[in-house]
Image (cartoon, rainbow, N blue to C red; front, side, top):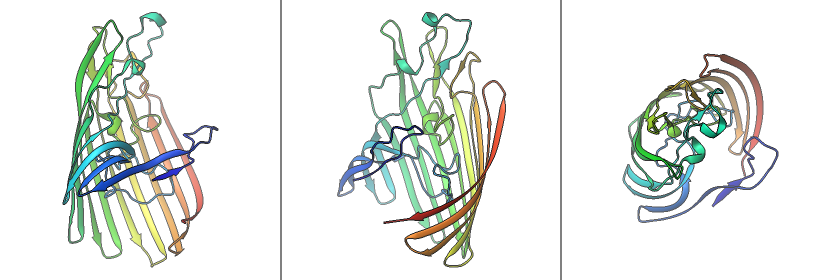
Length: 287
């Protein structure tokens, strides 16, 4: 079991359960990292969330998983997000169904194979998940799919990392593809039909171990979720990019100091672009 007090960007600090699971003979039951995730392509950052596109889901889910060697299969708590209707000319009572009408009736099924060959580590995974909404008077169902491939090559003090992601109706599993975490999977059109949204992403990273105590890390990532119908919005039609460069000093195994430059860029559904730069310093003690 593991928890923390991260408060989801608000002032209501509360205990958050991160991990709570048990395992036996390759069978795992409980809440832990999604089977549709990997840390193979995760370049170290001081930023709490890290590089866009560097993962699959990138968080923890309730699941039942079976692992045999490098292969794992899991039935997971499904994640889904329907885009919002933002057409101001439509009366509120006539707005199309959105995320408030999303329902789930079956788990997501994920497959992953992760292994290494000498200095090369890799991970490939896929996920299938039902999308569904029900307003009581109308409903529809579609399927969403996602896949990623990640690799890391260790060449002495240098480590190179890369990942590519693709999604059709499974952008909830495309890391940092929305305004806060992940993007919309689908929207409901004027005929009451679910229309899936495609997305893609990727990340590159480089780490250089200057000495046993000092490491230099650089990474860049992006995600892109298509818009679909221009009358929908929220986490649809969004492009995110971020870049990090940091220096970490670890004088002992429990203590780390660091300084990092981060650059962030986003393009919204209406074509508006925003960017920001940030320099941060950190001290971390692990206990």
